[in-house]
Amino acid sequence: MLANLLVAFVAILPALAASLPSITPTANGRSCGTYISDERIVEAEKHFEANKVVSNSSTERAPLEISVRVDYLSLAS
Image (tube, rainbow, N blue to C red):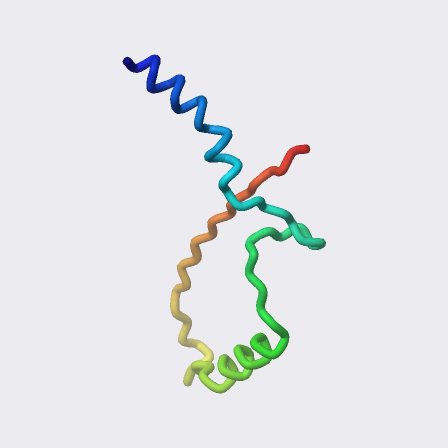
């Protein structure tokens, strides 16, 4: 029974892989698919500048916790 399920899974695996969207890196190597127009970037920068929080004290510092996650996909040919 388990062997039959494994054979069926292996048989449909190519069809599943073919149905996934292809990942084609752009000229700069990025492949996330996100595109932000120049106008939208300018609009976001203006919004950020207009709503920037300014500290009242140069000696008052708040801790800043930073988490970084890097996903790397190798497209070996």
